Amino acid sequence: MESLLLHRILPFAFGILGNIVSLMVFLSPILTFYRIYRNKSTGEFQSTPYVFSLFSCSLWIYYALVKTHSVPLITNNAFGCLIEATYITMYLIYATKKARIFTIRVFVLVNVVAFAAILLLTQPLITGTKRVTVLGWICVAFSLSVYAAPLGIMMRVIRTRSVECMPFNIPLFHMLSAIAWFGYGLFTDDVYVELPNVPGFVIGVGQMVLYAIYRKKSGAVVDAAEHEVKVAQPTPSPASVRQHIVRIAEHVVRMVELDPTLDSEPQVIAGENDREKKKKIDVAEPPLISTPELDNHDDKKKKAKEENDMGVKKPRIVVEHIINIRELISVVA
View 1: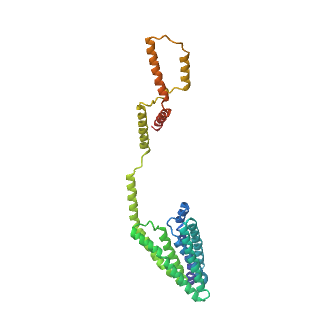
View 2: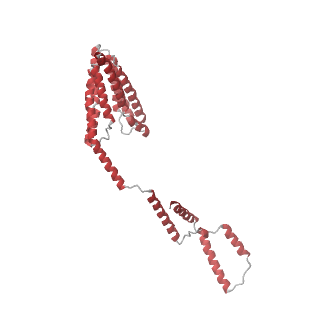
View 3: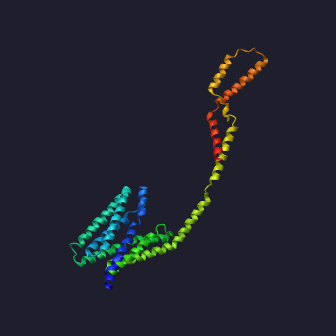
């Protein structure tokens, strides 16, 4: 019973757990690629980590096939190959020409040339258990080199005192993945699976400690910045905006009404038909006898007619704008 637990049940359980957590690790950059898809541009994102991750998954599949009886390793890294290939394809679609050429060159160099060289080295030249040993150490060496990226991120967090470049979920999933695969290697007596997950666990714990240290400091800086913006640029209330519009509109109306060259009363504008009727009436009237009183009356009439004509020539647009502004004031107020 104890042998069954140690050699069957626990390896299977840790293998399933490793597959689940590793899937979360593979999917952790999905927000980055959603941003690339939304912006239709890769921006400053680099494709190199995904190219090397695809190479690592391919190596572990080859190792599991040579060793045999390592189904959890095969399924886990098969998912990884599929996801990383999808990321690389999306990157090539939205990258610039220069970045696309660089990605293709690195992809061919690593995933074609280097992988073919490993196949040629291990297939015809090395046989039996030595092949598993050589492949195991190659996988360990490459897995350890991959940890250079998390170490660089940790140094950046310490230097900038900010965790913006290190979300909490990524180190958490890496730490859980290292625990799961270390347990799988321990209960299957596979030292090549155990070794790379020891530094993986240590780095994951270190990242979480850094996150706990600098998270509050980063949050304090962000809160202070937000408070400063709110004080410097207060958001106006709807009531203050409405009062401001009313004051501006009233000022415009007052300035137009005080202008002596403009007439704000629309009723002074006589229509063409009214003037024509007036002219017809004036023509139809019989001539009057000239007297001083009549002459004085004619002068007043002529002056009034000139003032009326002047009012007719005043721009109608100004009068219409005054009416519209007054209506705006009544609606807003």
